[in-house]
Image 1: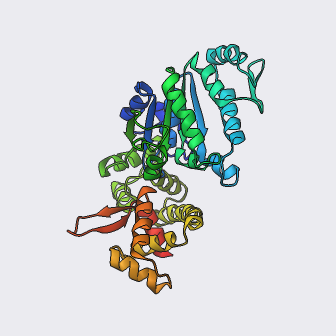
Image 2: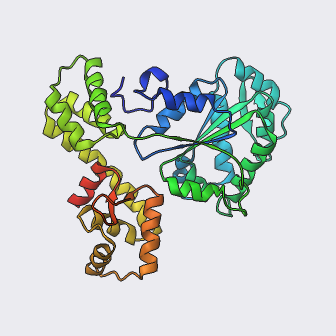
Image 3: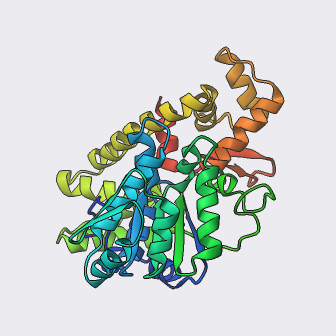
Length: 358
């Protein structure tokens, strides 16, 4: 069902993403980046693609980051690999059992696998190479918090697999697009991944007409008649990010009231923003203030600077430039030249409304 809030698992459950699914499933590159805004559907697309191959392995880097208290350990990555290996089904699992029995540090009991303390991930990957694997890592930019060297150990592992394991493919997703590129550093000579080729699949919000059709089909699926006026008003308010369209559809099913449904969307968004701003504030307390400034219309360089001053924060020009660049890399804001001069805007209109109300 289109209005099911859980990540989708099959191609039939996704709306108008055939091109992107095929790009992931059929890519011949050892490394593919699946990029897009928050709540645009990257996790669902990744899971669907992994389910379409018998050897798909799913790793959630964001979950590891939060579960391990803000720093991803080798142990937590092993546990994620172990869990994913044990979720494989069908003949591939029997084949994997035979292969991993030969890998040091891997305990095989029947068709269950345990990565012991002395297990090496590089050796596990070498074992997987015998049968092939498509390894999807969701929100991979969080792996910059892996190990003791800003994730370089993981990049070295990825580079080793890229160069030597021809039957292993990696798909990395990222909402903080610039940070993921910075972390991988594919164009930095000092990076373990320097010079490797890769493919990018960009998952964009739906354009207006597709957003309208998404809501129409969602309501049709559940047998609810909703006027085009209501649907178009919702799209005007929410735009084309599938996560918010789903939230509106579910809320309207429960309430039958446009205003209540929109308020439920904003309530969910407030919770999301509260958590995300808390994370941003750990990096710099200025980030939330800058976002609120832009949401309130203080969208040019000098206006943002003056807004910060009005809140008792003096920021050197070079530091403000760096903060704005980082917010762009994290896909919170983007430059807007439509007025003939450089302004900044919040990328997600629902998040912008929430920030404006704070």
